[in-house]
Image (tube, rainbow, N blue to C red; front, side):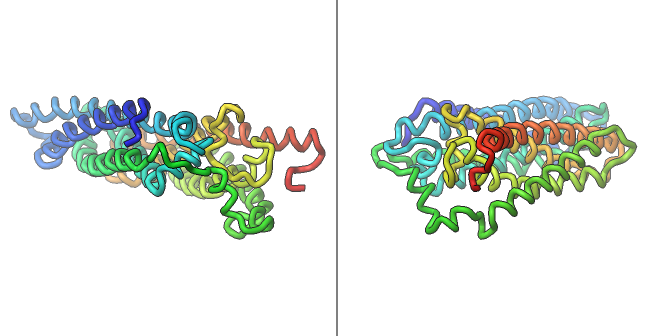
Length: 344
């Protein structure tokens, strides 16, 4: 086991959040089975009080998992490599974790996305006195504890697999993926120019849609659906473009396709605003796409859903602007200084 103090903080936050989720899940299970909003008997009144408590517990658990996820990324990017021989950044730490790091990050992302959606449903529900979404929200919540349990188990298994006495070579992981210079200048077989072109087109499209969808309107459901879809496509193009092309201008060298070195102090820790913006776009786009689908039979909250989608559109626009500034300013400065791009 890799007994790092930060790991103890991560697992403590996870276990506390998991305990809250299990306690909340018991209440929501009873709610899903026995909720009768038009009844005023003793069981219903008691259940309503417990639902309010469960709502608070679930929100606290969500914030704890968010805090734990940040500590995990911070530890992988900036701390754990100091105790792993041969590791210089998060790539070396992930190498020491073997395949467990990928599973852990996927489980963590899935957990946060599902909890984000539940959190938004809960806010919509508690915003109205009659709480029209209590029963469907309770049923949806029951999906979360199993995902959280798998995430916590994967966290323990991943850190248990780290051998602090086994050296790694993170640079070899980065550079050994290329067999030729031509391959280093492509991503999934496509040239860098095509990735840059697609990135620019999708960025302009998403920015325009987010500005349009964020304006007050009677009903902009189609815009919200289109923006949710474009945000997913943007993520699929923006991440490879950032890591394989734009990161070179932050590192000052070509073909150093490392996603974790962007977090290092020598590169001004630009990974935090860049990946932070990506996370905001992913979570807000996911919320915008799923929230209207889950609440189509509840016209009482239709206006609140539309307002939430408009806020999501404005947040996507702000996050994208931040991403574009941090990612594109170094290439532009390079071009102005040297008169050419790094790739010629």
